[in-house]
Length: 170
Image (cartoon, rainbow, N blue to C red; front, side):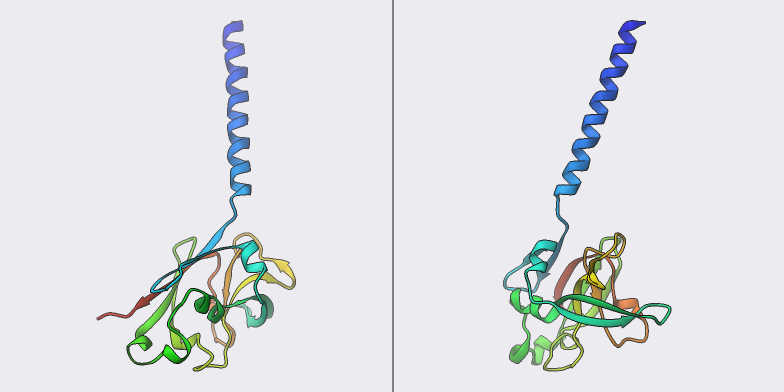
């Protein structure tokens, strides 16, 4: 009887240590957003990386029509850092490029590069890392795409993990 009791105690201790170790690994592992595809310099940005960049504010309406204030980095700035064809180079065949935004749950939305370039639009779309001065809540962040001035917030994707640049093809 004692032999089984000792084995059970050892098993409980081992399982407890394993779960603590996995928990610690998940806490220490910082989430990233990747900028990849048709880029010169692929990026893998953490929350800390984004915090060091120039932030801008954006206001958008939620599903209930309530205005919300977010802060983050302009998508255009991230595309420039990754060496995406923007600015003066965004013409001709390059106007067929688009950005696919992918979230952790598989949700995806698309933007033409012209929708993101200040040479074509006055709207500034951001990759937000805070709302009302606080980090984004679980289930929303750590990164959220914020698209101001749209009638529906459907393209303001939650839990963004990838910004993928591609060419449109038939």
